[in-house]
Image 1 (cartoon, one colour):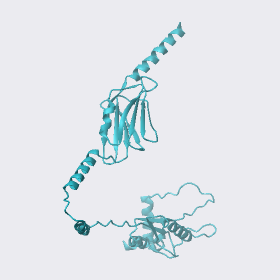
Image 2 (cartoon, helix red, strand yellow; image 1 turned 180 degrees about the vertical axis):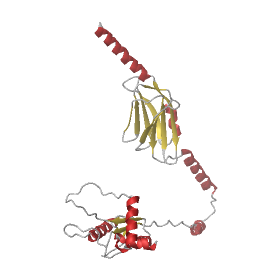
Image 3 (cartoon, one colour; image 1 turned 90 degrees about the vertical axis):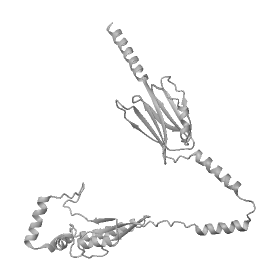
Image 4 (cartoon, rainbow, N blue to C red; image 1 turned 135 degrees about the vertical axis):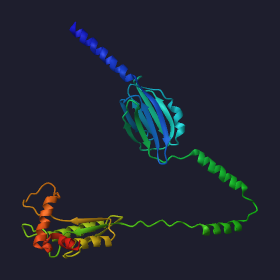
Length: 310
């Protein structure tokens, strides 16, 4: 008896689930044409189980709703967009399901996303067709105007006169010159240099030389890219202060200044990332120490010159 009760309860529970899912429905379908796309919005009473996919070489968009009824006469809405030929309410295997097929005027790669509903708003499925729609009415009007102009044209005008008039109108037309787009300038700054060697490695590798080699290679790679112009802040083993490095980048009218450094490390197998952390307390301590010792020229990278000049 206990087993029979459990079976009966399971059957009742499953039937309640199917009823609750079947209670879902498509309330509204909106189609809006924007300047660069057509947007389809399907409002559903609550979030359904659905599947959106394309077929027939991206000329059809299929939306399958599980256990959902359609309350909208969708076929009338196709007239609202030039990108949609018709909307079909197709049959699905399960009678409780709904399948909508949007037949497109051309192959379009659609984009879709969902908006979660609330107590005041329904769940919404949004499908965007990122193709500029065309207006049939405007096209038909332009044809009528063209025909009217053709009819109104007098037959007595000779070909010589019309060609002369055409030349005059061509002279009057001033074509706007399209502005030339300049390349994006990137300034590559090889850190240290000259009297400032930077870090010195275990085998006496000097950071300033490594930085310059990396900088030259980076400039060569970037200059092979169309629309990019890369320049070097220093081309030789020369000491340049921080202020002068910035001034050189501004002289080149650079949009981006990249400074290349090679950190020293005690292990032969370093791992992880190098992170610069600004500590106000430590910075004040080091600055006061340098000012007290009056030894600003020893600051690496030309920071001493920057402090003296500001």
